[in-house]
Image 1 (spheres, rainbow, N blue to C red):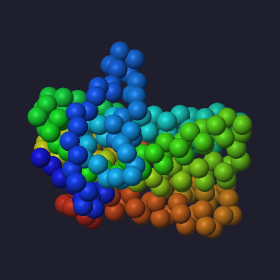
Image 2 (tube, rainbow, N blue to C red):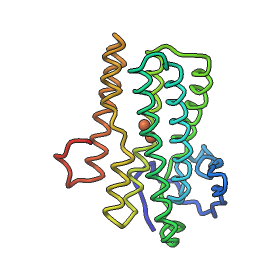
Image 3 (cartoon, rainbow, N blue to C red):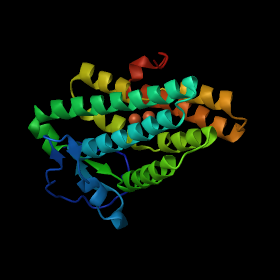
Length: 230
Ligand SMILES: [Fe+2]
Ligand SMILES: [Fe+2]
């Protein structure tokens, strides 16, 4: 059984049998148990499989927001390319998570029995944010507002949580690859905020996110402590 310090604050472990959320025919994910969990109790014991499925759903929603921005700014080639690249990164994150899910399927004992502490409010917050921003983006957004939305979304802790949970994957090469694929290098976002806005506070938030991603990679791969984020 695997435990994680994430969200752990002494709640009694809850046991439940996760329902099937994944429909392999249409490749869609439905609301997971992690999200349905009673928020009053905050941290829950859930399987890593549940969290991966929820994370895939969030990555796809983020990808769709960035694709929308690419369309909103299609007349500006630099912005269109930037947002499309951001969307492509999210597609890569989906791929990494699906890859790990597939590995877990070949190790059903690990997949079903690796329960971790997880705070579902992280997902509820991010899902609400993505839904609200998706609706707002349809009406059109300014360049600065799009950057602000991306920074809010990227500031969610979900990817950090998933990276931490991936430590249960025993196969080191796969685990390192998945972590590397999952960590979003946001230095281009910081560069674009600086180029297109005069908003110092927004730039500071973007820079902070870049730093946090480097820290996440360092945490995930201590042996790469001196390696630059690629
Ligand atoms: Fe992502
Ligand atoms: Fe991202």
